[in-house]
Image (cartoon, rainbow, N blue to C red):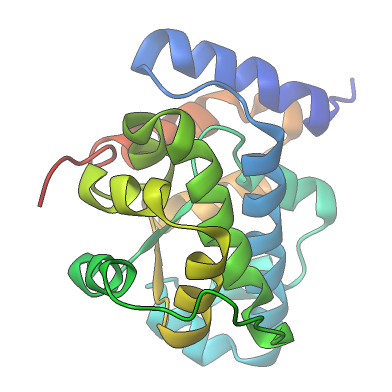
Length: 206
């Protein structure tokens, strides 16, 4: 029997939402999370030792990630939460957004494309619900409120000027387990991933 990861994920998110209160499946969240995993796969091929150290991943997991297929990366990705969390100081981001910025500047830097996408996606979700955004991105509502009030230009400037170190939100051991699991039998691992990710997610005021 063959399972389709694209159709499997929304069903898993629905089940997780019912049991753990996770946000609903969001295609934009899923696509961005998949982009992050795809980037980490590329980095795992080029810089395995650095990836292992920065993300606390065993080298055999980094090797498995480097050779992962698109369908495997989709199983690692989520449409309800971002699998990675900011490990930088949130107050720095908040203070930046509260400061002066050039209202007419147009930033054209391809190196900040992913960073800009991160902040713009957070802004879109936070504009509707700051609590849900805090849960999805594993940040405080202090940050999501600041992001919700920021303009797109402010968020692009933030992406350009501030570093964005990331960490994986769930146990590193789960990465290899999910990669090596059959799509039809990966349900409990995906639920475990979401449960672990939500154990510290949706933080409130700093």
